[in-house]
Amino acid sequence: MATLSIHFDPAVLARLTSASGDDTVHVTLSLGGGSPAPPAAPVVPHGPLAGLMQAGLLAPDTVLTFHQRRANRSGRAVVTADGQLIVDGHSSPFPSPSKAAEAVTGNVINGWTLWHTPNGSTLDQLRGQLDAR
Image (cartoon, rainbow, N blue to C red):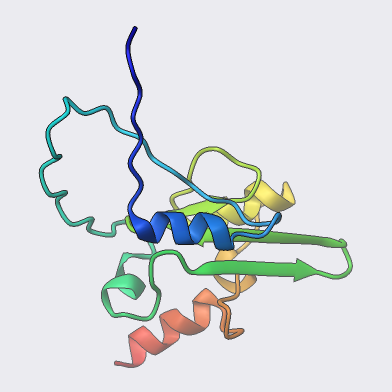
């Protein structure tokens, strides 16, 4: 009978144990042949958020949120290392802030002005900072 052995980095275990019931935790599994995996190549962000990430204005694992009072809806997304957004309730990442926002609202919408970072800045404001440099 085959045996499955899963080894987690301690940082992953810490993240899993600190997650609340509202958090989405993404775990990627890869099959190995029993020998240690070669070091992974660094992930390079691409797409619309790449410039913000490369400038250090937006980091992987940043949680973005929005709340629309009139429509009584909220959204939450996590920035991936490659510059995409994983939206709560959706299994596939979205390549742009607007596509991620559309997935939550059901409407074509400007995600750059909708999504907010934990400090309250919109992605559009971060883009303005990048342009000012």
